[in-house]
Length: 406
Ligand code: HEM
Image (cartoon, rainbow, N blue to C red; front, side, top):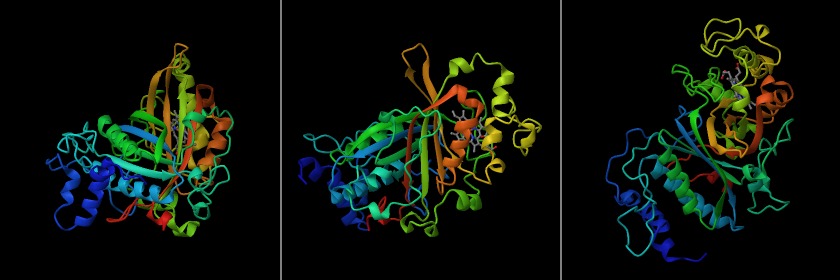
């Protein structure tokens, strides 16, 4: 690989210096240009599981899908090491390398727009898509044998109208933070660091979380105005997380133990039609009231759901675990509005994100059922999609996906 001036003095220099000097007091090189202690509001980056899954949902999202544009496995690994070091810096509230104090005759290492901002609970979560393991019949990186059986190519679901430009991707990174500038800064700098190795295939900004993983807090509302995430897996439910979210070594792919599979769907919501629909019909579609969010036949939002009292085609009745042999998923989606659709309507909807232990047993049967029967289908359309295997958390000194490449 060409060793440009930028790689010598830019981010590569930072990693070499930080790696060689770990324990020798020079690691602060990675935080040059920012001497503010940045521990407040920081979510720990290292751990058994990646942050950003069971972590209490932050306010904002920048989700990016990347294509790998090199066939060079070693370059890819080097980039993943760089990404890991930079992700650790960003989530700690630091720039990666120098944002303003470096050499005057080369671009700064870090783009700088997050300087002075708190970490805002930033989490960065990486996933590897099916095409990283095999694309057009080619085993580009010698990973084919390591593809987990659970990392399927998603089937076509009834009503899907997927835009190839918003679907798939070899790698995904989910950036969540309470400040959109912090999330965007992280994705922008990962893309910049990965120049020549990856390119952004598509990305999605999200606001207004549509799911809660903290049931004791006020449940957020989606673009239909309904509380969303009432019955979700909470980040504190260790047993449910083990059962439904974290992959286990015994599931088949040893390198995925402690990881999870993410399915993302860009779901357009036809809010203009919805807004002309009667309150009664809106409520019948979910089987819950709009104000309190109680299920039909129940008093309060968090009361058990008496399924028989809900309309047969209501979303909640169809999606409830008792209608699906106990299947649960961890939802972590966000609302979006991306301008207009050129027809006088907002291009608005829900960027659905779900984490699970095995999509073959969780998202796929659930979505098959919803796609075929859900009364909500009249008002929504799935227009983008992706599935990725998110490896377990990183230990200090390791890197994102280490188990996959070793
Ligand atoms: C625009 C699309 C969607 C909207 C507006 C929406 C909205 C809602 C709302 C308002 C609830 C009730 C509150 C709650 O328990 O969280 C709910 C529950 C749920 N939804 Fe969705 N949803 C959408 C798509 C999906 C998809 C694609 C899936 C899975 C394939 C899904 C799975 C679930 C599940 C599992 C529940 C909890 C059911 C229960 O345990 O009672 N949703 N959704």
